[in-house]
Image (tube, rainbow, N blue to C red):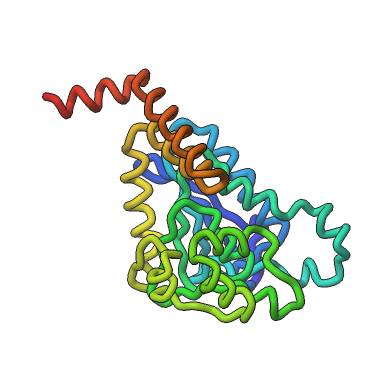
Length: 251
């Protein structure tokens, strides 16, 4: 099987949804620099596109992403790895102004797990697997794994997952609060599209304000997060969407 010339495909579907698909099925969608650059470009394009209200990140060929492309990293020094700025794609996902739903089939391992963690919601097929196996390669997660899993799973579950390098199945991930919703195998993308369309149909200013508040809430104190939430709540009363929405409710 020949690798696609463009390792990521992008499309806009009905309902104001943009879909980003990693397309390296022969490598189980391993994430190399070309994939990262293409995802960043797609995020930037969808962020600026007024037609798009929500975004989906997924992978083709029955896999989400089986990790970072080790063949691209194996011989690099720490300085060379720093120069690649390989963490930019994860920051682009976390700080995208529009909600992103990860649709996970198969493997979400290493950098693939961190890609999913950088999204706002995760729909996972029942046969999906999550893991941070970096410890088995003599390294550690470097794009959010330790911090995002700590905040999502708590210290003890996160430590077990990261320090052993063991995978967890989708049902366990859902029980831990790592997955928003389970789907039958092969149906994660379809369900993610339903959720993304539902989000895209809501007030765009309100959706953006919710995402901003939740992003701030993960990175600051409770009191600062509450203050930011209140500010966003008040500012929304100056939007046409608030006037129309409340008028419909009253009528």
